[in-house]
Length: 160
Image 1 (cartoon, rainbow, N blue to C red):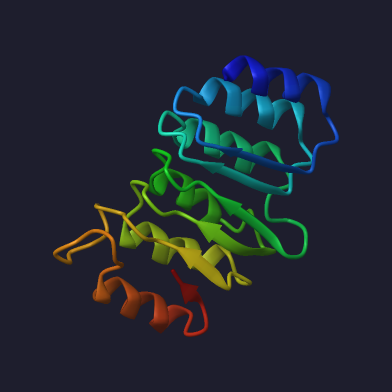
Image 2 (cartoon, rainbow, N blue to C red; image 1 turned 90 degrees about the horizontal axis):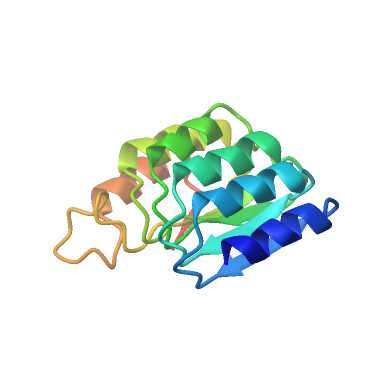
């Protein structure tokens, strides 16, 4: 719940890794509290939390150590994250980011391509089930034209 994550934010200021999954009622309020109370978070998973939006994710990107230490990873799969968060990544805020999960979100191909510019070490990218990105008959796969654009920019990035 928001209250639980808020308590973690208050009581664990040295937290460096956080995994929050399957919390349909979790909101940006809790994620912002986490970003303010735990600035050392370098790896995070916020997955299947549909009420978490760019407000919470952008707070994490601005306030925490995400993507700044070697081998960093993050996932926001199953949230309402969009290109607004990817624009912050495109600015180079996470130069050490290796893996990011963005499946089942509201990101677009343009946002993903822009993000690649600011994440030079990105090696693995999750993009399944993104209805705003796929032109295929089913949204369970990444559209071929999106894969081509990613491969043009970064031929070695694994897309899943």
